[in-house]
Amino acid sequence: MTDVPGPAAACRDVVKTYRTATESVPALTDVTVDIPRARVTCVVGPSGSGKSSLLRLLACVDSPDAGTVHVGGHRVDDLGARGRRRLRRRHVSYLFQRPGHNLLPYLTATEQVRLAADLRGAHVGDAEVAALLERLGLGDRGGHRPAQLSGGEQQRLAVACGVVGGPALVVADEPTAELDTAAAVRVLEAMEALAADGVAFVVSSHDPRVMAVADGFVRLEQGRLA
Ligand SMILES: Nc1ncnc2c1ncn2[C@@H]1O[C@H](COP(=O)(O)OP(=O)(O)OP(=O)(O)O)[C@@H](O)[C@H]1O
Image (cartoon, rainbow, N blue to C red; front, side):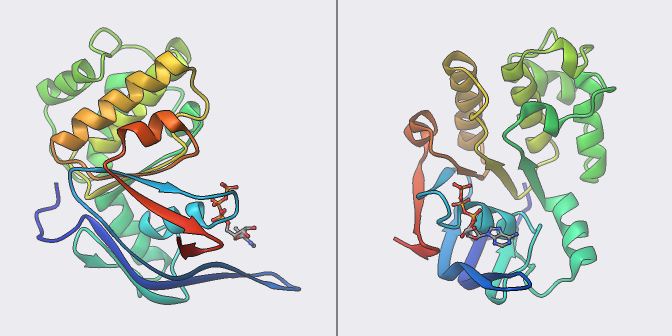
């Protein structure tokens, strides 16, 4: 984990407006949130309330029009795309809802985790990779490529890649949306256990199964905290 005091991530008075050729769409207005360490924080709200926009700011994919964003103790709102990319690589991981989108089709499970660690600049030995896969119920799947894994196994592998090397924050946009209940429960159990060990997850979801494991909520309505 990034060893700095304070929350894993924080937004202060954040404003985000999307501008198209013909209109301005306010997505977030004066949003202030702390994302604590060692917790699963769930971002909830109706469709269009700004959940993905907030996750994109926390994941350093996008920057706000006003307000500040800190991740792992680093200020990110004033960085350009290149600076955000550098910071994201080291401190943030992002899980897409479709399991296959999180993985490279030609790498085995072990290779995916090792690559994720390398990209994060983390020195992770073979034993640590094996232990992480074991922890996620993939101990006998290290040599398998994504096409040889179920959707739930792929998403647990994505979680392994997401947490290896200790990023400050793991951002997950609807991580169980494509999974049946049994598979979703295993992914969520893994996230819960990893959060107990110190990982900060921030997850957007409409899924009551996700809400059941959340330690805290950020509720949005029309781009504002509800
Ligand atoms: N690239 C964009 N250009 C213009 N408007 C956008 C863009 N992305 C999002 N918006 C608008 O910003 C607002 C917030 O969108 P956002 O995707 O953050 O909501 P959401 O809560 O994640 O929605 P959903 O649950 O449907 O995924 C919506 O009005 C949306 O139409």
